[in-house]
Image (cartoon, rainbow, N blue to C red; front, side, top):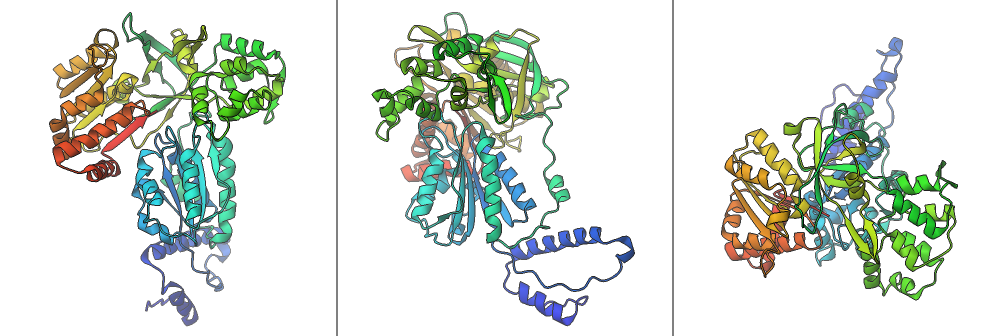
Amino acid sequence: MLALSRLPDTAQGLINELTRDLDSQTLTWLSGYLAGAAQVKQSQIPPSLAAVPAPASAPAAAPSRPATILFGSQTGNAERIATEFHEQCQQAGLNVRLVRADRYATRELKDEELLFIVISTQGEGDPPDDSVGFVEFLAGRRAPKLENLNFGILGLGDSSYPLFCGIAETIEKRLVELGAKKLLASGLADLDIETVASPWKQNAVELAKPLQVSTELETPVSIVTTLHPQVQSYTRDNPFRAALLEAQPITGRGSSRDVRHFELSLEGSKLNYQPGDSLGVWPIHDSRLVDAVLAQTGIDGEESVTVHENMRTVREWLSHYRELTQLTKPFLVALAQRNSDPELALALSPDGLDAFRELLGTHQLLDALKRFPAEWDAESLVHALRPLAPRMYSIASSQSLVDDEVHLTVANVQYEFNNEERWGAASNYLSNLAEGDEVLVFVDTNSRFRLPEDHNKDVIMIGPGTGVAPFRAFVQERNAQEAKGRNWLFFGNPNFTTDFLYQTEWLRAIEDGQLERLDVAFSRDQEEKVYVQHKLLENATDVYEWIQSGAHIYVCGDADYMAKDVHSALQKIAQLEGGLDEDAARQWIDELSVQGRYARDVY
């Protein structure tokens, strides 16, 4: 029994009764709460009364089990939103913890009382890499009954993909099957994340309050500020105007691809980035596309439309604030209300997933408007279109080398559809800029795609096409760090003579010892196509030896094909070289991911 000499016997008894059955984690939390309460209480007492003992108050009820905010994030957006939500909960007096999915002990799930999940969807309804283990556990036979659990889910996705926020919906369905109860409707956020995330977070906080003992003084605002320094002044919503310093093609004449290297000035911004981060670029739509959409719909571009108290002309909305190069399901639903074409109806039906994929994968907005003509008024069109989202590009430079600059590697998307020219929004925008023109940009951090803190560790980098961009930054940074660990790059593209991106730099890095090994796969230089996964398998013995000796593996590029093929190749290497069966090889890969030694930046 604790002796509390400064308290009367009655108070000692109450406190001992209160703390008898509390575990060490809750006691630690309670001590912090009481310290914060004392600090604020003291600040509220007038100086003339500061020395007068306050009357004893009734003891607070024991705090409930901490709520858990579980996040799964591929590029950092879900982590950012979850962190903001965690702070919002703390400031509202909720007892809450923040846990990344691959750090969550699944045995604790059976005891959870209040669980919030913030998770992004990758590709065809897949979970982010850090959430695979949690999702598999939840779907498996070991998942416990959860009758005592209240939960809320915030899903992040992209409605230009068929299975928008698919993993969030899968998790919701499974939790309900296990007996859990929804505290609030799931939030399904598109690329304009805050439109859904902000009200969802506020509703979640208000609905959680009655389920927990109020602890309004748990974390004073001053402590929150100390632990979470204020973010940089230039953000997604307040981007920096970066001047274009240089732009040059880095594919040769005759290449099937137009890839360009861009260098932008960050001078005066005080923006900092690390290798592995991305640069967000706010594009402006080509006036030719805006004119074509206006002509197809018959809408006057100078007509004004108000959205959320912002009044702009239709031309301004379409040029700067609305998505025109990517179709989304909400727009197609609005289109189907105006055109009863059976092909469109099929694509939106439960049985039309393949037709829906085909439509999203081949048609831009203008193509859909032409294929399914309908009557539109200015307000309906603007409201039906998704807000324009920034395009994210892996940064291709180390700030240790380039200082107040940032470099990008961008594939200029151009093609023909029904004999008409089409292009990508941001790549076309960047490719038509002149030196000195300004671009609205911001830094998007990716804490899961980081070089090892131990500079003696080896790294294996797998980045075909423009996926090589972050590895240019990695090699530059490792050189600046004077890292002793070895660097091994796997690169692939169609042809050696036209598509060897940054060839001179890589060869110089080999000569200077910055690259230990360079393996390339040019798929169309021979009759049988060769890709980076084939090169991995050709070097299976050395790849496995590097990994077993502590190497970190990084993959960047296409999520639908390349990343899956590389993942399979790594599992195959574990089977061939490590003698593991299929299940053990899968667990080997999962463990590398949990350790932070297998990271992917895929799109």
